[in-house]
Length: 231
Length: 231
DNA sequence: TACCGTTTGTAGCCTAAGATACAAACGCAA
DNA sequence: TTGCGTTTGTATCTTAGGCTACAAACGGTA
Image (cartoon, rainbow over all chains, first blue to last red):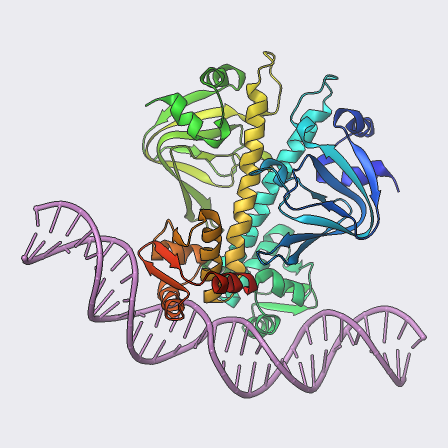
């Protein structure tokens, strides 16, 4: 495994040169740890001093419910990170625990050094900073989009908006969803059968055609209308 | 109007000293403009070169729907800002237009200079940077919370979760909502009558008591249970 | 090509919550 | 105190969509 390649996949190191990545280790107090399954690498309530980046393996995030139970609230894979939000919110403590699910390598970089110009006056700080900002800002963007689907009340509205957005993004009448019915239903926060039912109704109305994750839009105007009037 | 006081209210200038605020104008290329009603201060698609902070007055944000219509998508008042997300996402162009609704004063600071160390080597950059980061990170946090309510399917679940969260935040059995029924219904994305109906059912079940925006929690355990099992 | 696991389609029933429309209560100002 | 606007409560009716449970189609593989 090539650490440079891996890191460049992470949004924090987008457009970094190899030699800049090397600097991470001294300028940003970067260091790498290996963990085996079950190891807790972040604990709810503990102060966030470093951002962790999963170089390989997998991990699971847990929040603590008020009754004390832990609840799975997300998964991390190679390239994903943790602590990057909590590092800058509220009391700067982890809001979820992170537990290694499959033997993993984690790169840590110090939160404190990210915003500080280092003595070497290297450009990597600035790049990293911009990337951290992009990373957070983009997250806000996607969350905004996700919330839009949740707010739409009608089944047809949700589906139409999703398909129409994909249509705009992919630019062709034949779009690929990138998830199966279950995942799509979960994303839209509806039940799969109800969603299927409505998709079929839309097919009967001549708006779409589909097989598997490939959707063909037959009546773009109508889909657009539905997507736009959806509240 | 005292500009220092006003700016300190803005999250970007949290914990700034007066003399640091002064530096904004040279280090961060800050400048102030006055506008009258109807003036467009940000236009969809235009590159974001500066972050705008409303010092007083009011403005409205509009997104453009695919059919070309503009749709109101939010309001800005003193202390609010615009462009702070788009400055770091995608193609760095405004995703909504901002139009002045009431005569307003706007302070602009240059996006490019925020991440750059200035020649004066002043500490205000670093503070500002941290504040920008907090600002974005906190937004992610709140959006996450907001989305939680939207994902809960049952009326009682939504209400319980909201009240329970407020209970945790305010630490007393008598909580204040901070919005009226309409606003609460809108926030939870449900119809007001249905919400009222359920609140009354919960009162009949001895879980809560209420008048106006004051809610008294009579059965914390049950409320907690409801809030936690809500999906 | 026969088997099994997964993904998708179908059916029927039932209830939570939407919509509407009106009535009561509350504030506030004249 | 009366009157008016706003906020809240209530009733009725209707329906979209949840849930369950099963059947069909698909895909990989032995």
